[in-house]
Image 1 (tube, rainbow, N blue to C red):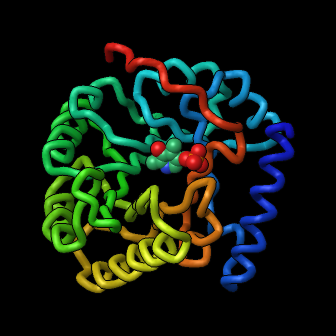
Image 2: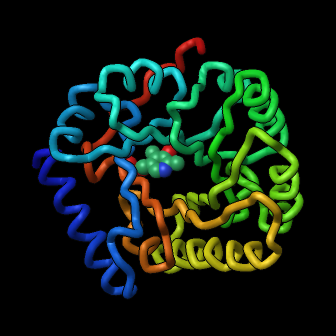
Length: 236
Ligand SMILES: *Cc1c(COP(=O)(O)O)cnc(C)c1O
């Protein structure tokens, strides 16, 4: 199967899932997760019309993005180390994985120094797995208030991964919970904090996520095929 065909199929499946939830496909953005994939594969997706891509390592993004046309949108997913923030720039459309206070502080510092306002989603540990990234729901209000105090970090919504070993029913439950948490927090009307976006759903569960209100789905393997074993992280 070609990347072009894969993309077509994903958009069809997204369309069906949206229809099933009485939603419009145009309110859901597909991120093509190109992490570990070669530039040629990303170009193929671009040629098929895809414009929105996601990487999980700053280093890889810095190498790949300049090789693609300027009208691509780049999202950062996956854990962001504080010492990598200095390599980021305002070509990042959205950082999906703000998950802790010291990262917020670093973003605010770097943003202030470099006159960049970082667009972020707050990652929520809906599976309540202590080994996974993301804030617990009871920590969120304080955290969003901390973001509200930052002049160089702008929240746009919430993100979750769920749990890798979960059944589809459990996974759908995690997605539903993220939506509910968002609705509760939205009522608090925290100044300058926007919570419109819900980033949830990957190759194996994006339809469930759409059923539960996802506005952004993050699909890698179903577009690009299986990933090779990851290289050792480079030095930046
Ligand atoms: C890799 C990754 C994805 C995509 O996963 P696939 O199973 O390849 O669709 C989505 N979200 C995050 C945070 C990821 O790291």
